[in-house]
Image (cartoon, rainbow, N blue to C red; front, side, top):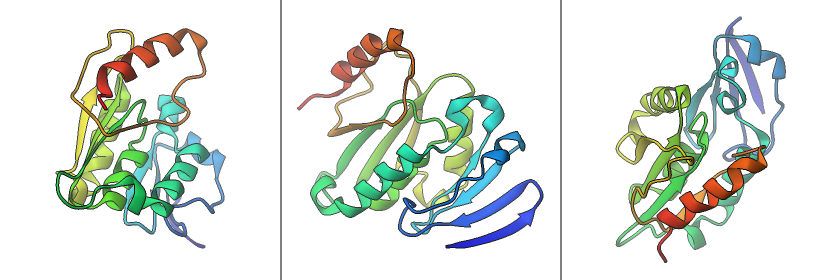
Length: 178
């Protein structure tokens, strides 16, 4: 692990793989932004003041590691490629990592609501080599809509409110067509 301080408001962290071994610095949530760089090439800024979705959480890092470990089984890297929908993307880290790991034939729709859409757009812009693969969309589960047919739907720590479970499942049903 390598940790290098860039300034008092930015920190660069490089994790092994796409990052399941790391040390979180939760005090960074008080900063304007907190930059993380992952060995798979993805860079994201966290914005803790936006709320829970403005932070990279451990579950995203674990799923990134899973996607990397099982990439040959998960991603169709030739032919039609893989279409992925991320629900409740927050910072967009998982969408960007999926695009990086899946390769150029992978397309990821990175979705969220409110200010998180702008944060995801910002983080996609920090990763220009992935910008053609990651499409940012506003998707409110309370007004579910179909964005297309997806091979895989992903999300981590997407809701702590049981009131959102049914709208979440309706959104999944509208977008997953086997």
